[in-house]
Structure formats: structure tokens, C-alpha cells
Image 1 (cartoon, one colour):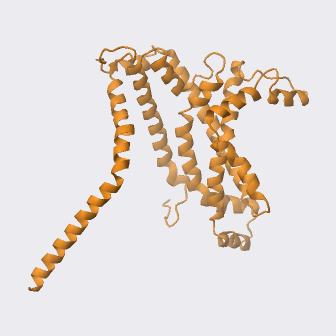
Image 2 (cartoon, rainbow, N blue to C red):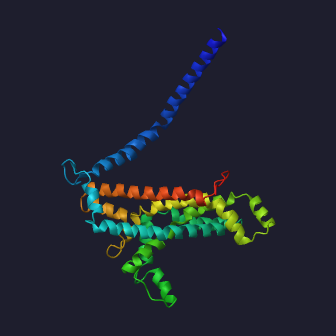
Image 3 (cartoon, rainbow, N blue to C red):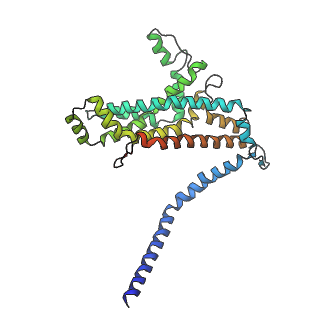
Length: 312
């Protein structure tokens, strides 16, 4: 066998090996692919189809094709609750996300220190993040109760007037912002891990250069944590626009707790407009995608990527 034939045989063997590896790879990931197709991709595509139809889930009739009528109904100022729920959700996101980022960062800076028993405090602050949202909602219904709630009891001890947290339209949305801070422990733990990973040499070099505490935080800690803050910001945007269960449990006066996803639920199961609800869901998908894309586009301006050079 000459050299050319040996090379061809070797190339054929390599191709067969890679082909078999591909088969093995697809076999191993096939359970996930099947699950994703059946439980995620399939329902998404079906909901996209339903968004162009008129469909009553109580009826045995097939969905009736209406084209873009569902989207026109939302955007042509016909459905006032659509805009009201969108504004409520937008205001909630604009307030709760920055507060959550600041609170989680502050807790992480405090609890990242190597002190005896610090793990107990980390656990205490992290536990609320893993509690079921329904249980959290029930707890806050009691805390915000006008007559015997703990929050109003503390206010009275401070000689401050009691607040009808879920009954006064002015205080409903602030109540939900307060509840959103309940789960900052998850982001806190991620930030603690990131703080622990910052090289000590960076702080030592900053101290040698005469940097104070604030300068070290601004020029060393924040840049090193910017990628984690970016991740928390994106996930926070997605989560804030999908508030449902806590609003469903806690309620509120009027439409002040009418978050967007809660309105989608009402459109589907209270008003029995499944096609319109699917259209609203895809509108939300577009909004979240647009906002997340803008945040990602802006990331080179404020997120530090190690090894990359910034161009001015």
C-alpha cells in the first residue's frame, strides 16, 4: 500500500469516527431535544398560530383565522387595559430592577468577608429566594394587613400613620416593589462568588498606587463585577416583565396590580379570548427581546471583558 492509499484510508477512518461521534452525541441529547420540542418549541409555535385566530377554549370549534385583528385590537387604542397593564409592568420593572441590583450588591459586599459565622447570615439572606412565590405572597398579605399586619404595627410604634398597602391605589405598586426585594438573595450569592474570584493582586496594586476605599470599589470591584451585574440585569428584566403569581395571590385595589402577564391570563381564561391572549404574549416577547437587545448592545460601554481592548 503506497503513501497515497494510506492517507485516503486514514481520512476515511477519521470521517467514519466523526460521523459515529455525531450519532452518539445526538443520541445522548435526544431526550432534551424531544422534551424541548414537545414542551417548549411546539407550544410556542402553536401559540403563534393561535395569535392569528379567534379561539374560545370552551368551544369545540376549530380556531377561526382572523389575521392581524388581535394585534390591531391591542394597538389601536381599543383595549385600554392592554396599555394600563403595560405601563404598570414597565414602572414596576424600572423601579424594582435597579433597587434589586443595588440591594444584592450591598448585601454581597457585606457578606463576602471571611468572618466567623458569616455562612449563617448568607443562608438567612438566601433562603427567601428559594421559597415558593405563593407562600411569599401569603406571608406579605399578612405583613401588609391594615389592622394587624406587622408593617403597620412597626409604623405605629414609630408614630407614623398606618398605610392601606393593598387597598390604597397609591401604595399597591410600591408594595409589589418591596416584595420584589424579598428574593435578592439569589443575585447576592452570585455576586459573592464573583467577589471571591477577584484577584487580590488588583487590590494590592491599587493600594500601592494610593487608591482609597471608594477608588478601589469604583476602579477594581465594579469593573470585575460588571459582567455579573449585566447578567443579573438581563434576567431581572425578563423576570420583572413576567410577574404573575405574586400579583395573582396578593391582589390589590382596582387595576393597580394588573401586571401584563396577569392580564394575559385574564384574557385567556376569564374573557375566553385565547387567540387574543396569545397575541398579547407574543407582543410581550417582542418587548422583552427589544429591551434585552438594547441592554446587550450597550454592554461594551460599561461591561468589562477581560482580555478585550476598548476602542475610544
